[in-house]
Image (cartoon, rainbow, N blue to C red; front, side, top):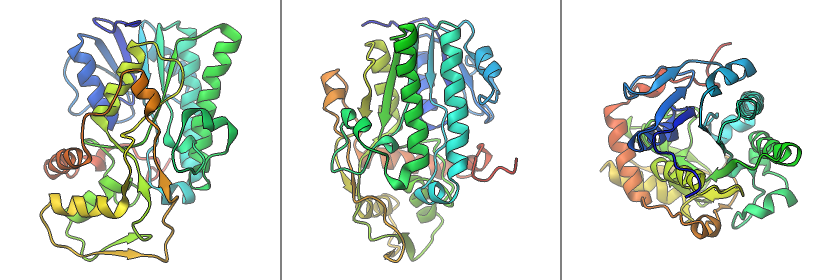
Length: 328
């Protein structure tokens, strides 16, 4: 172990979000002194967590958050459906460029011991399998062009600090399609699993889904993703690493799995006049496994836990900061 997180001061940006909730709990198990920065309210965070409500598109706010921290996990991001990526690209790209650039700069100025940057599956060009080293020989998919480039710029920024300042203390993870408790369940702009959960629980029937259900995707439970992040930081991994299951599942199978978990017989229909997205997006997880990490939660287990949580917290997503619905 290169980095021992035990009893250290750790900043988690986006700590009220889906992955952040799991990460905070896991860091507290290591007796870390955890600070969370978010634009959301701290509802449900443990009392021992220090909370700061700051706009991290502003560099001075980022510096304020990073001062005195040993480790920074930058999870702040904007999560939305492919539809939102096409219709509201500026809502994805501009804030991500601003807060990712400012956060990494602040962390370097404050001389934190280690920094984790959360990139995305969106950095990849369409392919049967996504391999880490293929990123810079291609362009992001047209379906992820704006958020994909924004995430790539963050990776380039880390490379620039390494070249100019010798900063070799940044881990970069590229999560697959993450789902879990505390997700954005707004059916108007959420990702596939939380959107389908909300619509099925709401009794929408027939449930009409875009495309034909054949695209293959790689899903990772948020708890596993948090484990992967901690693992890469503790082991001092500086090369980009995919975090995914490495197993592909069709959107049709996901929809049917959620329906079965909820024990309902609603009809699912597919609107083939609507776009279906890239045919296959599967992570090569061999690098993660070579560093000693592998997911432990099956898709069925993860969907069941997420569904059960949503049934008891159906209105929480409405209180979350949402770049697609905010008026300012």
